[in-house]
Image 1 (cartoon, rainbow, N blue to C red):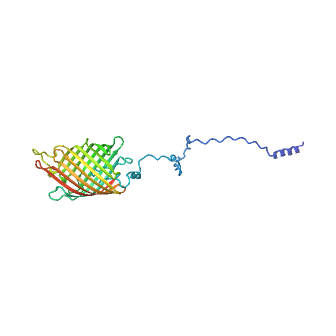
Image 2: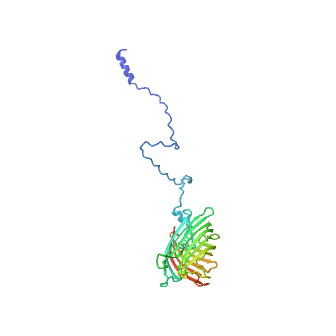
Image 3: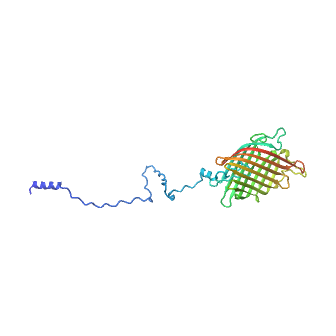
Length: 356
């Protein structure tokens, strides 16, 4: 074959299509990354990525798939719902803040304490004339405050701090005149509690009392009974024996003399009783009756009082508007040997209270 024939054969072989190669088998794809393995660290200088919020379950999804709600204090709506339906006393006030024999009932789901504040005006009639040149002030201001604590687990514990002040009875409108301060600690259930310690100091100048202090412990007890589906409430306090110390105001103070010692020269045993009966008239009217009695042993000193009130609860029982009529009477030793004296007063009050 000459050179021209070889060149044509080479061109024919170059123009012919190559033979198709057999396809090779590809390796299987790698498995997806496991959720248990940590994600690779971000490259240097990259901003941190925020995790997307969890998706809410679709309607009709099983209850077990919903995330559990975080534990914490009840909301204000839940606390309001727990106070009970309208027409019951629930956690509302029974009387103006600071009034005797009217304990508060805390909601332990929200707090172990419950507080109340009150303010109002008072009209007064009767009593001893405090000044020889002017009559007693007929108008006073009312200020009250109260804090009640409750711990139900175990044998149960409770505490109370109560302050009630009537100002302006001695000439200066904001100068405290009448009133009481009480502090107590109890153990037991709400219906029956042992009073481990209780201190109360009262002042009633228009009744001849500069200070009357009472200190009580066992066998003193108290309780609060819920009746008729909590539409009625009965509170009682009984102190068979307690320590009592009294000091009369200036004109009625007894100077020590043979056979007739001063009223403040010693501490005397005494007995005390206090009770309040409250009724809720649906939907929001609250009626209440209260009485108390303290009597020293072997001495004429005695304090008797009674109170009637009518109130209207508003704003989910957090506010109580009250009108009260209160009568107080004190029997004490006279300035002369083996004599006694009695003084009484009548007060009409209009008070607004807030509990929280």
